[in-house]
Length: 106
Image (tube, rainbow, N blue to C red):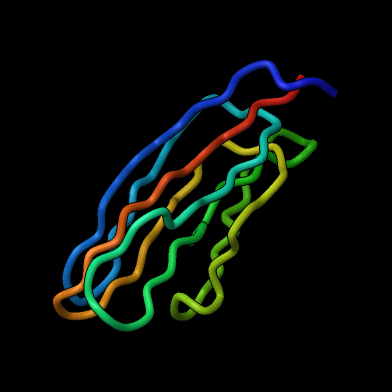
């Protein structure tokens, strides 16, 4: 397998709660990962993959949701994917900057 394309996404979370971005795409074999590259304010902050949609071998799609709070999120996935939801969790008076990368394989 070789990497055929790399996509980058950037977003910011602020305040008490979750900030998400959902990337929908034609089904592709890829790895997706997140990087928390900057923060402001004290306390814990985390970035990860909250859910994704996998394409099964018969062409149907299955939602994979890392249910629960932010402790269940994954830092990376590798699968045949048609949607990825990246997320960041921040507390009150906190800000976090996230970089999400998707490497496409052929």
